[in-house]
Amino acid sequence: MPTFAPNQRLARYIRPEYRQRTRRAKPPAFMQDPETTNDGLSVNTLEVHTDNQIAAIYREKFKAELADGAIPVAMSTPRVEDYNIAAEGVGMAIAGHYPQEPHWTNPGPDGHDEPSYVLNDKPKNESHCLVRFTRLLDEAAEFRFAVRMARTPTYREF
Image (cartoon, rainbow, N blue to C red; front, side):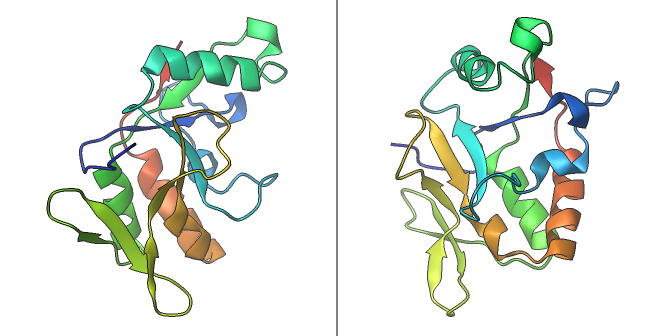
């Protein structure tokens, strides 16, 4: 089970149209996927699968947009702390609980704390997680968050 520790890396698939020659992702790569429900940003934890295993998952899932293997899989692997810093930069309060096991929370719409990161309860695979707090951002804050995330480590191709 993922701990979502600050240095833990979360892989995010980078669509071909969001890739730049500098190997930095364009901001839309870190925005809510338009075809998904508003559950959060879809990621995979490197605590469960290796980067090569996650690349294979993405290669299978996005086969059509990768032209059946003609285009390499690209993914960015920012740390949990990078997500937290970007969230704080747009006014989202992220708090940690439980000293031994970090469980990040943020105030939900009803004022009660809710998890910031969760293992997907309907997983597409064992490492599939959600960056849950992104669903609480309005459009402007979501874009500012995405711009901050696009400045995190460059993506790699597999």
